[in-house]
Length: 634
Image (cartoon, rainbow, N blue to C red; front, top):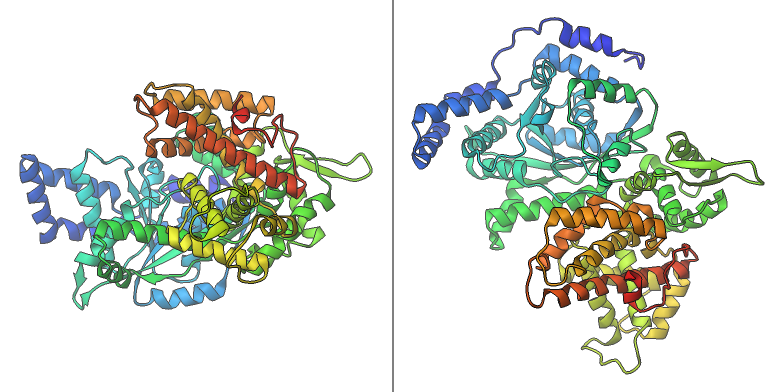
């Protein structure tokens, strides 16, 4: 399709002329005459004390609202429009992965759980599959996108509009659950964002269970004429070199209001895609049969609710594992670690050890790019300059690059697409630093000095558990032991401070300051504001706004390492941690616990800063990195 296709063309083909008369959506019509569904409506009417006719009418209206179909005319042309929306990118797909998935498509309903970084995701997934002649895909999207006229078109192209807030709408939830059940019974392919909405930070958000729960209910309770039915759960990672919409999302993190979707918004969004932004990478994670997984989890004693939670986390882990490392992400990682301009050699000083680490761990690299190649890294730097994320100065003896004004959160978004691959390494560095700092008179637990390191790692896991996806504590320790074995070049049953210091000094890359510092700095600002409240209960919204204001002040004063830590998204995660630790309600002892919380985070910041010094990446922050942790809050 021509990249020069105009928005006017789309309007004439999709909006300007009457849509063909379509048959009623199959599943919706089937449900209207389904005895199982009607029995549940009768039960709902009795439970709510309402006339059954009223409940049926309400459910029928909800069905009309969410029902989707695949009309030949609209699906073909909306697919063409989707390709046009994606014109800023070359979409790269692993055709071997697609071929394997095609075999599953022949006899299974595919439950395609995709990561969500852009509005484009919901177009990319069905378009990639349609172009390769998969069975039609029904994609779930927010009802906020059900815009006049356009909503009609996309509903006839397989998009199912669903409401986000349904807590007080039991008949709506019943209708949606039943509709999903009917789709699964009919072996339809379903696609949805496991995150529920677009990430504002670049890394995966915690999974939302709604659609997955309905699919689980369908598999456990539905059957077709041939007996039990199943679905193949398919994680689908989508990552982009760059995105036009990131600036808007990161602006929300510093207090801007989200602009509501409208036809005008769609026109502006489409116009943005004129500028090329590189590549989009669609990667298929490892699929698994849902019924078999459920049976295994139930055999382990898990309830359906617990099984859904476990499966959702498994999908998130598989998405992270499938997400390839982009050159953009690694370049942003290097530049965010310094608050100054770097030349190409200095960027490569950080990138090349990371490339070796990525190779050793066999993480996929987007487009099979060579992260050690000077031309590849230079091209990524130039692309980031063109989009305004970086600034370049080339009037001296050599060109240098740095993060542009107010672009730290944008650069962090790109870095965060791969940050998960470095979290274990970062925590191991801090665990080894804890051993290296041990006082000779310290009373050691069973397991000795190495156990002290593992306990520190688990403390950090608990501190960051709302930020990253971690396995259970025992598996987490095993993962770190594997990381230590690779770092040390062999198995270590014991370790002492001298050995820990040697490992820290000689191993590369050092990543704790690159990976954890932005999050811990944000946590420190919120913990500081919380500690100032004494024993009083806090209003969460007021606390967030005060933290945002003080965060901006601390960034200006250089009391935190980077402006990327000034983010409502990070403060909300810190708030969730404080809530989990029961630090938000007032009480006689809460002041001391809040102070301890702030001191714990401040000491973690101190340790991360020491790793930065060890790596030679000390930022010019007005903080004494060897000082008592309380000094970090003054």
